[in-house]
Amino acid sequence: MKKLFKVVLNTVPRPLLIKVSYWVKPFFKYALRGSKYTDPIDGKSFSKFLPYGYINQRENVLSPSTLSLERHRLLWLYLKNETDFFSKNLKVLHFAPEQAFYKRFRKLKNLDYTTTDLNSPLADVKADICNLPFKENEFDFILCNHVLEHIPNDTKAMQEIYRILKPGGTAILQIPQDLKRKNTFEDDSITDRKERERIFGQYDHVRIYGKDYFDKLRSIGFKVKEVDYTNQLSTEEIDKYRLAKGEVIPVCYKN
Image 1: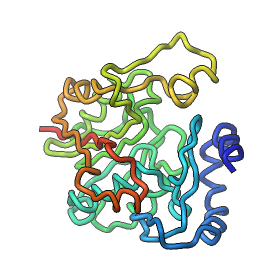
Image 2: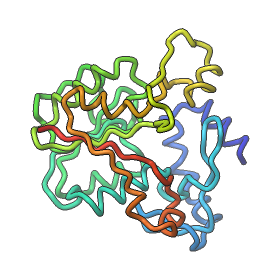
Image 3: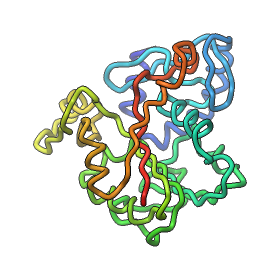
Image 4: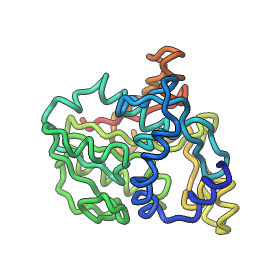
């Protein structure tokens, strides 16, 4: 199973993976039915979750029902329990919309919901994050998760997100981050795909963010809260929802 997942993840284009997933989910939901672990996004429980990972596969992390990972379930719990995302009328922009969220957010009556990406089949607006076709101060809430590590000029991307966010608005900008690393690392001279995979975690990542990521966001103008939401959950809840203890959610505000 591990080898098969690794081959699929590294060879099949992501738009095709999204399409195929709709066909295979019913099989996994039936095969892994149980009550030990729960996906908080849809409330369904299973005997175990699926493995996932491009290089080092993590066991028991991919939900058979929503195909969510640890970061998705953590974000869902944070949005549900700590924000008014599900109740207040908000104009929302969602970059590279995750399959686990897309249909659920689209159905929320309180959201004026727009998705954007260059390649995703789920994008309403095909756009370059470094040159967005939106007005200044247009959105109340922006979700941009696990995108910036793919963008060579992440400074410009952050500036664009700040530009289109309304004063008083919120942007959640999750990234894969090594909190043991003080400074972000990137090296454009590494061009070999396998070497980039080994160093950056994926061949299409251009950097590994360190603790200085939060300060870079602040330098753009954001007020940043480094939210470790797992600190507010019990050990039993962290295990039940299959979360990554200590993962930090970067919650950014525009004054």
